[in-house]
Image (cartoon, rainbow, N blue to C red):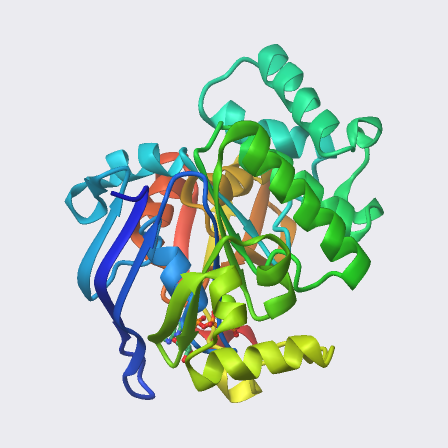
Length: 345
Ligand SMILES: Nc1ncnc2c1ncn2[C@@H]1O[C@H](COP(=O)(O)OP(=O)(O)OP(=O)(O)O)[C@@H](O)[C@H]1O
Ligand SMILES: [Mg+2]
């Protein structure tokens, strides 16, 4: 029994423009200690699949088991607990830009209630591991892409996860930086025995560090197996094409969706009446729900002598945590109202 067992998972999105079958009867079994690759073209369903592994996305059909627990049977609270065992890193790092490197790594620990001093000791160890101990007080904007990804890796490791999900973690990096990040992931896998899932559209990444691979095409698994075996005897046309491209050194153009396909998330206006700083609240939302929140704008107005802060927040498209996020903010005394996109012009 693998640490992640995806059985017959289908996922259907139903936006206004019509249904999208992002995953169709997908089964994947990932063993403890694997560095498991999931590869496919843009839109193949890779991110959807990886988000099903921590239930940030709920499958329409099928079962997802992590450490032999059926995620569909867990409460929101149990899921949040489970997610502490599953770290995640992304293409665009998603660091908190107003916090320095050390505080970024401490963040998940604070949320778990770890004391400041203890959190900092742990965070420094992790920064040591990723080779950035001397940049602890630096702000993310001052770091290169590769360094930012190292901070994100340190942050993902802070809660001692047993699984690390990497969604296109090297796609924004040049080949040399990619190689150094892959090396770091391999070291983490070997040193701590963390199971790693690598989502990529580059066969070179799979060849470099994965032991097994699944090839997705239009939501369907077209090939699965040991990396060495797939390279030696590719069966599907998709595998053959990916290997041909890898051998010929063709570099993929950055993945870009046509503008019409860019989906916008819901926007909320939140209002603070006290002088309290809103920034920690937003950071908390991001870490608590593991969803990026886009700050579209903010300002402070003086309303009859009382400072009144306003901020426009945009959630990701079809955020599954919309209600929870609104409740979370309201519990902290912040007024929340939804705004229509056309009101914003
Ligand atoms: N929340 C959503 N609502 C509607 N459709 C969605 C949603 N999320 C994904 N899709 C659609 O599902 C399909 C798979 O998307 P997904 O993001 O999983 O692909 P991907 O393989 O990760 O692509 P990329 O390499 O571009 O990141 C696409 O057609 C996408 O437009
Ligand atoms: Mg994706």
